[in-house]
Length: 212
Image (cartoon, rainbow, N blue to C red; front, side, top):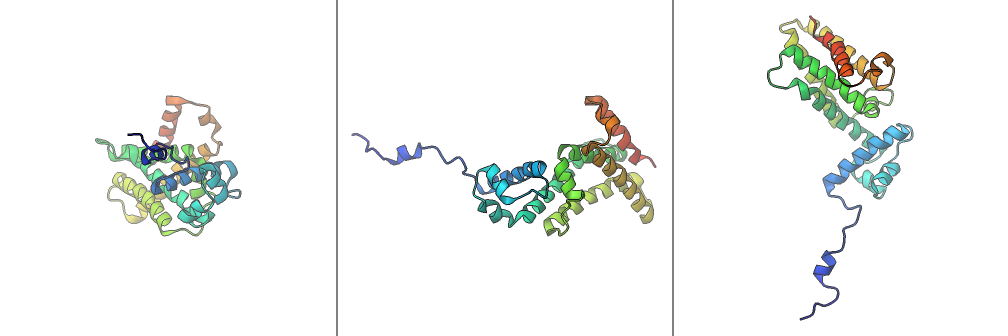
């Protein structure tokens, strides 16, 4: 028996639309495009339409997920704090590491994140920082800070609360300052180094936070 010309099997063989996304995939794609748009145009030139064009969807797609440009930037900063925490934990939570090693690993992870995602880092902490934060953004930022406090507490032991606060402030100031200088291209002496020599110098600077 011959098969009629417009059968279901023949229809199924047609390629899917290029811009088809699963629900979760589209949100992730929009966040990646938002990071790229932020790097290219900065916060002042950021728009939902530009992000949508990068992904190849209608301008209503990012609005559906994030509301407006401020909502998308808020979500991007939220993901940034989650990625920052993951970088801080990556080496700090390894087996057999003593408290000082974990604190140093958390600090180097902080610097590594800033260098890898400088535009998002500035969105999280710099002049483009989100002023009116969502609950998700505030929670993600707090989780990253708690990790710093926990790793510093493990090094400091039974220090009194005021002393612990000073140590946390000193550790964060050193690591954040180094991350800011490197990610903005101002630490020329260190940026002239590459590979293991550069990594060793960054670790040596960060290691100062573990000194009593």
